[in-house]
Image 1 (spheres, rainbow, N blue to C red):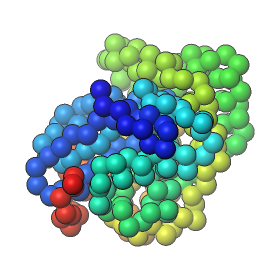
Image 2 (image 1 turned 30 degrees about the vertical axis):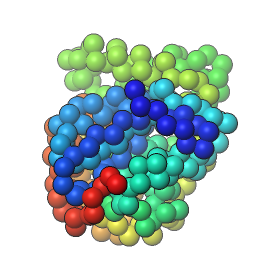
Image 3 (image 1 turned 180 degrees about the vertical axis):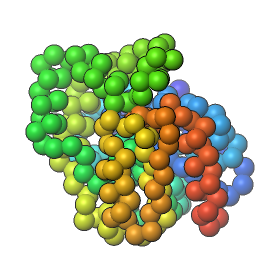
Length: 270
């Protein structure tokens, strides 16, 4: 189990190397998940593309450090990881809040970003009222009380019916996250509005969404793609908010195609 201290915050991570000179993809998780959500994607791409997965601050086995107040806290951690691995250029794959982290990192350090894959995310997610209600509920009653509702937007009815054990495991993953990490990240999402900065993204960008995503619906993700010059927009059929669990093969096909369209980078891992 590899861990690294970034600015005093211990981050749980896993690097999967590959031969050749492809730049690495860094996968940035959604709210309330740990990096096991990428297991099937990583398995299918193993050996083809270098990959880094990690648990965000306050999630999984990572520390919360001094807390989470903004998207920049998560960006600082990710920049520390990029420096730790001595990556030159990276492709950022951000899912949900991970997409906000990816957008913000690009704004702060565009030279280190080769391309963006923004999955089931937006330039602004939700309203202050909706986030404040969720935060208050979780702080009062815990994550468990909202978990069933979250599962309905994470996964399609077909997933609920056909994969009950996987559903139960994902619910366990959500409810076992640390409340301060969860609510702090909710606050960070609440306060993030990257509408203006999205218009200034100038690297190849793929925006992708599950056709039944109940958290960031296709029209919202399409609006993000519309802000980013030249962005590609794709919808994954029979998927909710977390296509990497529900439809990994379709997602991997999109990733392969997108990465193949990029100019070759220098060796990914020095």
